[in-house]
Image (cartoon, rainbow, N blue to C red):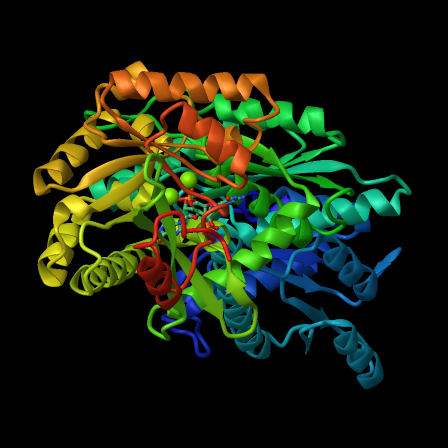
Length: 605
Ligand code: C2E
Ligand code: MG
Ligand code: MG
């Protein structure tokens, strides 16, 4: 192979400005043209270069005249253009064009040859030859080269833009990871290939969501949030060896696909392993932050045959892990899907429930253990859904908690309950107390204090006749702030009751730390009181210890006369349950209150 470097400098590099049809000042005059000449005649090639150079073209070239030589020349260096003779011994222009096409390079290919018919020229151009210029006609060749180079430059620019668009469409630039699109494409591709080979595709898809990430963004700013995401991406990348697809699926969501994993135990082990990647704290400037993920896992083919299905189900499992408090792994199961679809529907309907007046309160009497008279009522919220009918609070309160709707709903319940009780007082049923349930989320909001004090003020209800019921978990979760909140409520004169007592993990001695007034013994202990010795013992112990701590007791879920008898024997302060009354609308309660002047009349009718 010859190259321009082997020839005397003066021959080609020097331009001759004086000549007509000069390439000076044009594309060709400015840059070095790298030209691959396919010609069996060394003399013709040298002459061509000489003449181009005389037209102001700076160039370097290599001449080849066989397919293998051309092929290796194409792969060895970058070229701008191929100039090809038509007929050579053992090689021709169509063969050369084939070699070029096979190389995958997009170079202009110009036929530069004598003796060629119009028909041959057309055939060549139909095959992809850019143009035909008769040998010796340099004046014609220069503009053709120029035009073709421009075309190639445009094509190159388009290709680059295309790559960039693809990059943006498939990569997450923040974490330098594949994005959702590429994740799906890669997993699908692998699925197809595995099937084509006649194998059964098995794998595990992990959906990873960082717990409370929005709070980090809100507290420390997006820059910190972004840096933490990059660090998470790095740690996940270390977890993911070859044959694993890792991607950033969304804001604080990552996806991992592991080939070959097909049983739940293995998948769970991988989940635990990813969980471990979050053990060490994350750092940004001087901050040290502990982060936890919620991880959902779906299995191929058990939980879906396609990547979209697997993603959806893994995300559902992730949401379940999150609801369970985060920092955990859950494997998808069918039941999750049903409930999650329902949740979405319920949540959007719940958004309008307050405004559309679909919520209402029922009241369940709480009866004095000694006298059997009504001591007060507990307000229990109901949702009258226009299509589904009455929805019990256990179904929608958790959704309200999670979506933040509880704030509005809780305020509504409190206002309604307090003003109802005030109106009963005004009707002559003085001294009755109102119990209102407060969810964990509500209790965690400082604005609860303001809401309670405003409601008391606006309704004129005596604070001592309002009891807020919270569950044990609320106290255990964040004891320090719970104590603060309870003291503030007590200062307003409001009473505090611990609901469903016995189902959490607190001990009575622990409860001593909290300024509470009432323990409501969970109905699960009351239910088997007569038949189960253990339950009877627990109830006895709770009542005895509560007395020693000067707490009042309420037994929940009292359904039978036998239970009433046993509980009264143990001097439980108050009783609540279907035996006395189901939760009822206010007008029914008014009737009961009227009859209650007659002792013993408060019975389910
Ligand atoms: P809870 O506060 O423990 O309320 C007592 C639940 O036991 C009520 O269920 C009541 O209907 C039921 N119950 C009463 N007596 C008996 C009985 O003799 N036998 C049986 N088997 N059950 C009885 P409900 O109304 O479905 O409320 C369920 C839970 O929903 C409540 O448990 C409470 O935690 C929550 N909840 C209700 N209303 C509200 C509210 O306004 N706000 C909040 N945050 N939670 C509420
Ligand atoms: Mg309650
Ligand atoms: Mg309860």
